[in-house]
Image (spheres, one colour):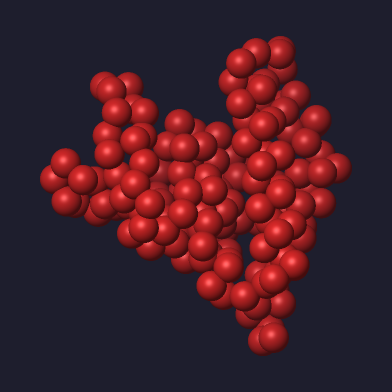
Length: 146
């Protein structure tokens, strides 16, 4: 395994440790009172950690780019007009809309987290739903823990 993959593997392990040891504190910071959104995020992060654990068991570039992860650049095609847009899914503290760095807690980020390449999704936006196809996923190394 090359050094780049080793570094990426370490980043994913760090995400797992952070989400395991710091999940309650993270949830308390962003969702101080129990509500439906907190439950959704907690369930999403539990599913996310399971995917990362499975991915680390059979670690390869193909597996790394098979799901949209925290740190992945995700290119979506809007099926209504065939335009494309790319986002990098990041932790909330790394958000930068000018660079298309979106939090996994944002409405779009949460819906794209764990998306798979070549799959079609209905993204819920304030004006309704919009069909998108995930064209490409590349782990982009912006997924460092907070």
